[in-house]
Image (cartoon, rainbow, N blue to C red; front, side):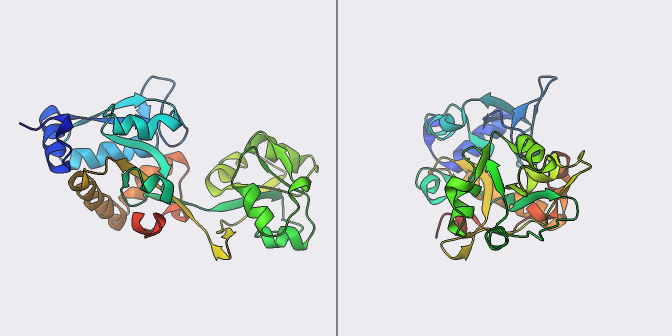
Length: 265
């Protein structure tokens, strides 16, 4: 009889089918995986997991909320069966877990005043035009701007993208940088600002892109491979974008990147 501690993905998938439920580790982050105001599990990753697990013969998913930093330890200690939190795939995490291929990629965009008067399309433009630049607390965009040659002490750091939009609208800065997904959402109701076309920032001289996927315990390659097979079918049919679109995702976020590429393999 298969048990949770068997550690083999094939056995785990059999057990999940028998139980009829898969436990999803989530971190309460909108739009990736969270409990909505009606107490229902939703977000891009749980909604996608519901579809894929159903196709794999597992009828239901059950949320296990935790802090983002506890997702990988919680997976390792079998508190849940898969991390469904839109987790970025990077080499450090790949040393601890195995990932599905990414279900989305994350590019950058700028919030600028209507008409983009300075013609800012990337970090190199920000430096060349000596634009007044803002981004969010702890955002990766700080490093992207510095890499392009922007003086870090000149960056206006604001709490979030709403504060960034306000700074652009008020004329305190020329540009606010964030992910394409968040900047696109926040400018929707603005009459004074717009979002630029999504682009890849340059890191170590190469265009860089982040991608998020589902994390599994390293021994569960069979489950990961079965999950990937269904994910690829959803990509090819266009169904993936339909599932993710309600959470603000567009064609820009669709990707053919693999976990192996993002893990540095």
